[in-house]
Length: 212
Image (cartoon, rainbow, N blue to C red; front, side, top):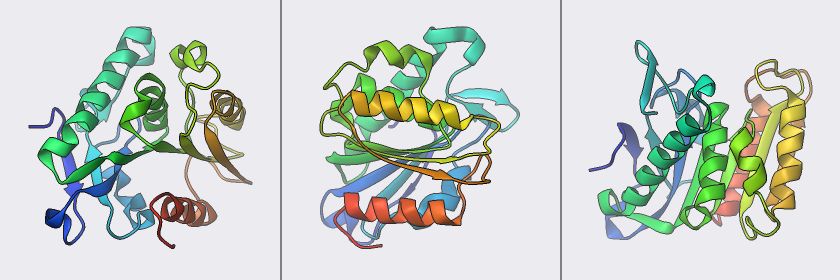
């Protein structure tokens, strides 16, 4: 059994062989249902798994780590996500060589954490309105993310995660060797606008060899 409560959407014909997968990682005070708005960006033939974060921070609301508890809490969240991803091929017909993370806000931070600590587990990350958590900066040495692909989308008016944090994360991830596609959207807050959805859809199609 997988370690986290989750939702799973498998493509038709998945039982016939291993399929690629997108693991959607929700943000602070989310759950396994809130990332459903992004499911339409995922190409046909790709499985979607959405885990619920392990910490209940309010009734029916969950988080991956608590900022005030520092690096220990962050690492616990990363390990919970890593354990979930490692367990996917044993629970579903998932190809472990074609797993991609999609994170929103804190979920982006967790996705970057897994990409940095265990780059062999995922091919890349789609980071939406997210940030690079403090513990990761010294780990992003040159070449660590060579061959990994990252999509970043951020609104210039994001008051929850200021756009300067996204710009800094872009530089750090690229400096570690990741292939980064970066998008900023004018007058957009802590969300993804229609153009962002289109950009994400096209990027995901390219990662899985399809067309948007």
